[in-house]
Length: 270
Ligand SMILES: Nc1ncnc2c1ncn2[C@@H]1O[C@H](COP(=O)(O)OP(=O)(O)OP(=O)(O)O)[C@@H](O)[C@H]1O
Ligand SMILES: Cc1ncc(CO)c(N)n1
Image 1 (cartoon, rainbow, N blue to C red):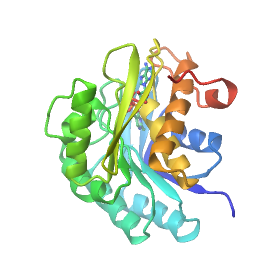
Image 2 (cartoon, rainbow, N blue to C red):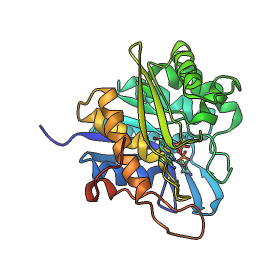
Image 3 (tube, rainbow, N blue to C red):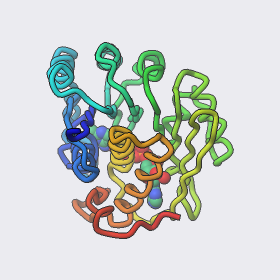
Image 4 (cartoon, protein in one colour):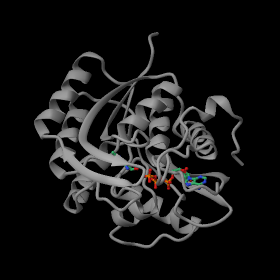
């Protein structure tokens, strides 16, 4: 069998640490063939987002059709989708091609505070994309936003929130605990009626630009290779923990994670 293929549908990060760039680097590290559909161009560095240039619906549709009509995909991840019109177009085409293993990273706000998803697009995300996804991977603020502002402050509340998001249409839900405090960083997966916890030592670093993108890209790559979802998340947790442990002091602000760390260093997962 040929090489497995993973498609990322996301925004470009000129700074190279997040978005399309993080995804393609991760796909390369995990031995899948990466393709990309660019939804928006961001002028961005480690200090923040300078500008956002969303692509037209036509440009996004055309890229999707070009990739899926010829190359196809064994999995797909979505990152920055920016507007409800782009979400609707992406959902329709993924459905039409019956692309399997959709990982939805509901990117909303960059670490510096810039908006990567228009407020009114959250409804389209919930109604159009969520029901066709294999898993959605919100961080804590994103999970709260998807649950109409409900606060999530503990692992127990992460479990409740994951179940609620499943009830609102997501097949499986992975809530990331990067934004909680404590000696460890715990993610909670709700899959097929069961909870799984993924725990790693909290690393004391400011260089965490692109953690969420890298994590969801790795999950998508592992699903493309045939791993079960709990196993794909386990590998991705090791991958992101190594990438944060060896993150890079590049630029003056929040530096990127090190996508090559997993193959160079032993993991520090608990
Ligand atoms: N300081 C840290 N030490 C260890 N693991 C971390 C740390 N910060 C985040 N993580 C882990 O990184 C992964 C991504 O989680 P995070 O909550 O940072 O995503 P995110 O906020 O969506 O990222 P992004 O800002 O790129 O969108 C999770 O597995 C989380 O537990
Ligand atoms: C393009 C892009 N996607 C996602 C994120 C979130 O980390 C970012 N900063 N930039």
